Length: 184
Image (cartoon, rainbow, N blue to C red):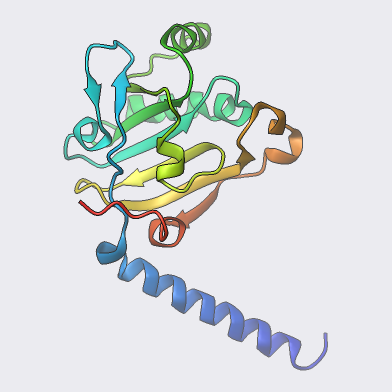
């Protein structure tokens, strides 16, 4: 290794660490809030938005579709977490599929998911800065985004390939949602 490469690498890593820590500590002021996207419940009984569905509790918001391979892979894990974690809400927001298609898919899995919401126009993804599925967002009890998890760039059925099956990239919300703020 050339003599300057290691000190430069250490300096760059330290700078990124300090910058990331600063973003996390100032995140309460800069965090994006839940976007005012109109959704509906799987029961179809009334329109709802994320803030109403969250009901003042911390929530995990998962954007998914039945055709998305990585979404299918993580669904059992999220369903188990929903069952196990009583103080954290899990909102499963389907992107662009019909109510009968969603019901058929969930029935085929045999997973008891609660709080399944429909986003028929797939508006929530772009509103939170997502370019693919699955996307998982973590909001605190006041509705501020704290963490984003983007997995690959599966924005269409054709991108559901082994190369797109990389791990989620966990990013502090102030960083991943900087240009997608929805201050209430």
